[in-house]
Image 1: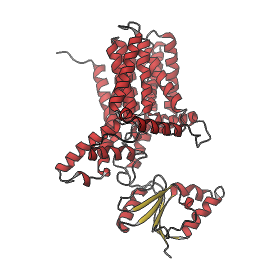
Image 2: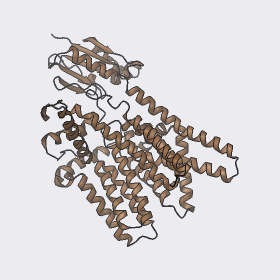
Image 3: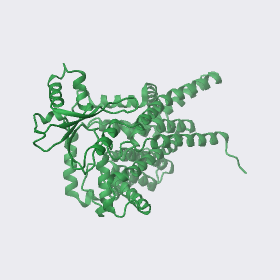
Amino acid sequence: MLHEPVNARRARLGLSLALLAGLLLRFWALTQGIGFNPGPDEPEVMERAVRMMKTGDLNPHFFDYPGLYMYVEGSVSVLRFMTGAMQGRWPALAQAPTEDFYLWARAMTAILGTATVWVVYRAGLRWGPQTALLAAVLIAVMPLHVRESHYALTDVPTTFAVMVTFLLSLRAHERERVTAFALAGAAAGLAGALKYNGILAVAMPLISCALTPRLRGSRLVCAMWIAAATVAAFLAGAPYTLLDLPNFLNQFARLSSEYRMPPAVSEPVWLIYLKHLRIALQWPGSLMVLGGFAVGAWRIARDPDRLRWVMALGFPLLYFYFVSHQNIIYARYLLPIVPFLSLLAAAAVVAFVGWMRRAGVPIRVRHAVTIALTVIAIAPPAYSAINYNADAAKTWTQRLAYEWICRELPHGTSIRIEGSVSPKLPATYKVSYAKQLRMDGTSDYAGRGIQYVVASGQVYGAFFQNPAAFPREFQDYERLFGGTDEVARFTPSLDHPGPELRVLKVRQP
């Protein structure tokens, strides 16, 4: 009987622990906000996924995102409904609210986020088992990736598909067959069908094709197969971009114009994104990533086996350049490059340890430095990810306000709420939303039939912290608070994070 080498067993154990850590971090606090405060844009996916299940109409009629993840979550919703129906939860589709499907939908994202850890490891084996394992651990604990794996959104699934494209492009280079390159192109098409930015992943199989010296066939034919597979997979995943072409083109044009609008920030977009990456990676990880870029540039210049480095450096730079020229800014837009940065950071650590070995540094010193660098790379992001989950698992002020309103105010009450992180109330209430209540001006709430307003510290907090800088805004809210009766206030604390929320009763004439 053949025994597995000790190093291989250790690598398998390390990968298992990384996957377990990734799974736990992504499933911890997965229920946060369900029913009263979903994540930004989550309803855009979930409302359409559940509607498809209830109506049988597979046209999303919405093209800010391609349709693939709506179909995935629609399929998950079908399984959830069938399971719930067998348990007697719902006697009919009409009685199943969208909120009841969020947990399973989020679990799907968390599973794909955890699977990304495995894909990073498999791709990283081209750099060696030590690099692969460290890269897998880094992405497993990366706070930005952990956080976004809690929501039914397209960014984590797109990142998974991009990394599959990367892995398949590396394998295509090794196998030197046109069909292998076409398979990588299909993965890029699915990445694009999850989120339009994902289509940039097609650059990887094209680069792999161009840099494979013993390709079995014409490079032009190979590139054509990659393009054809990309388009076919995209249309298979998001067919209504073609079947409902006019609607798709109109919405795509509107979306493109929104991304080209002047940004609402004074700093360059690229600098804001670099700050987001620095926060995600922490300073030690950021320096290691810079080291990885330096090592990669050196290898590209001197290493005949440069393809893996070209893709590992080239795709993040291409993607970062693209998103830096879009003027709608969210940290989650950076997710597809985060696994590459984890790989580069790991490669830098392993390269430094290799240099110490070649320089004749004593083995005990090498081991101590290796352990220190590993801890420095992993501990800060892991600490941030754990803190995020620990806070998310608490009862937030939005939940307290939601439960109070549902308990104390009768159904049919007319309520106006401000802010993007305020509680979302059931449809049994007459709810309207405002960015800032002060923008209602001298609105006669009673004359409009509004009985209560909910003010959020997310909005008015800055004005009250520095009234001298915001005199008009401060006076507007003073007038609002003075002209209504406060019936409940939910103040953030260590046990109850979130914005301060004030429930104000409108005075009736």
